[in-house]
Length: 121
Image (cartoon, rainbow, N blue to C red; front, side, top):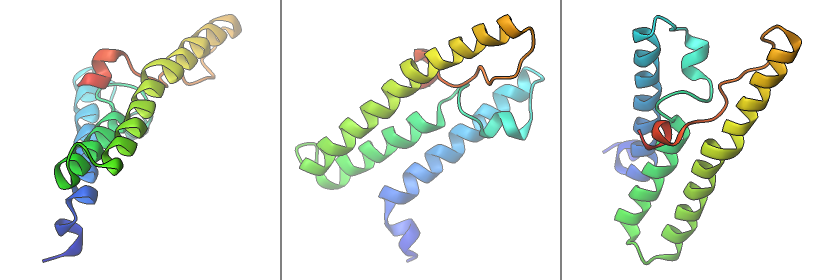
């Protein structure tokens, strides 16, 4: 069997990220706002980063057990990435929106982070 498929700690997160990215494209298509750049960029729903780290934590938890040190490390890593997506990058997007409004033109990317519902999805 191929090593890539055998090592599900690599395979499952890869699939989760691809599925999240394709779903983001579908949601953009539905809003008539689809373009590849937006689909691959940060922000929007669902969160590819959150799906990736959550699936890594889940796969490690399944393989090594929830009481293993590696699972604790990966869980903390996932929490930091999700916190960053929901809070720090989201606030950066609000700042970009305010600066764009002051300038009168949209130069800065406003879709940097995620709402909690986008991260949960």
